Image (cartoon, rainbow, N blue to C red; front, side, top):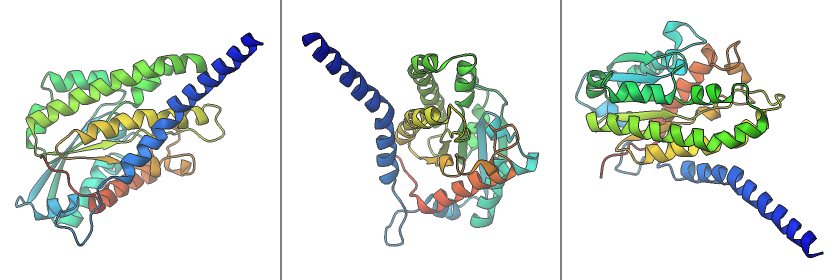
Amino acid sequence: MKLLKYLICLILLIGVGTSIWIYYPHYQLYQMKKHTVKASQTDDRVSYLTYFKNTKDGTLHHLALGDSIIRGVGAGQSANMVTQFSNLLSGQTHKKIESDNQGINGITSSELNQLVQTGQFDDSIKQADIITINVGGNDIIHAAKGLDLQSVFQTYDELQATFTKNLTDITSRVTKLNPNATVVLLELYNPLSPDNQMYALADKLLPKWNVHIYETSNRLPSSIVIETTKVINGEHLQNLSADGVHPNLAGYTAISEQMMYQFKHQYRKTAA
C-alpha cells in the first residue's frame, strides 16, 4: 500500500511538473503582452510611428537581419516583409525609407551570431534607424530532423538555451554599436495544420521559445516584438506558401501590417 501511495504521488508530481513546464510560458506570454505599453492620446509618450514621423531626418534606414523569412522566400522579391513594411512606414511618415535586406536562407542563430560578432554588418548597423531581426526557426528544423517525439522534448531546453544566448549576443552587439536604433524582433510561429500530429506539441512548446524573445526585447533600450502568431497560425493557413513553412504574399502582407499596427499602438521604449 505504501508503495502504491508513493507511485501515485510520484505520478502526480511528474504530471504537475510537466504541466508547469508546458503551460507556464503561456501565462508568461499573456502577462508580457498584457503589460506592453500602448499609446493613448492622453499620454505625453509617443508611439513608434509618431517618433519616426517627428525625426528630423528625411530618410530612415531599415536594416533586416536573419533567415529566409527576412529574405522573403515564398513571395516575390519586392513582396517580402521588409520591403512591404518599409513602404507602409514611408507612406505613414512621409519619409524616404532605405531598406537593406540581409536575410540569408537557412541561417541559424549561431551562424548569424558569428557574422554579427565578426563585424559583417557593423557599418549597416551603425546607420540604421530600425533593425529587424528574425532567426531561430532553422535551429529547430535542423535539430528536429530524424528525431522522435521523446527526443524533441529532451533536446528542446538545450536548443532553446543556445538560441537565447545567441539572440542576446546579437542584440547586445547591435545596441552597443547603435543604442538609438529600434530593434524589431518577430515571434516564432507554428506553421503546422491542426490536423498534423505534431501541431499540438508545437503549439505548447513555441510559447516557451517566444518568452525568451520578449525577455531579450525587454532588456534593450528600444525594442518591439511583432506578434506574428496572430497572423500565421492554424486558423490562417492561407497565409502560408506551398512549402507549408514560409509565408506567401498574403502572409508577408499580414506580417507587415501587424508591424505597422504595433508601431502605431505601442509606445517607443527609450533608454533610462
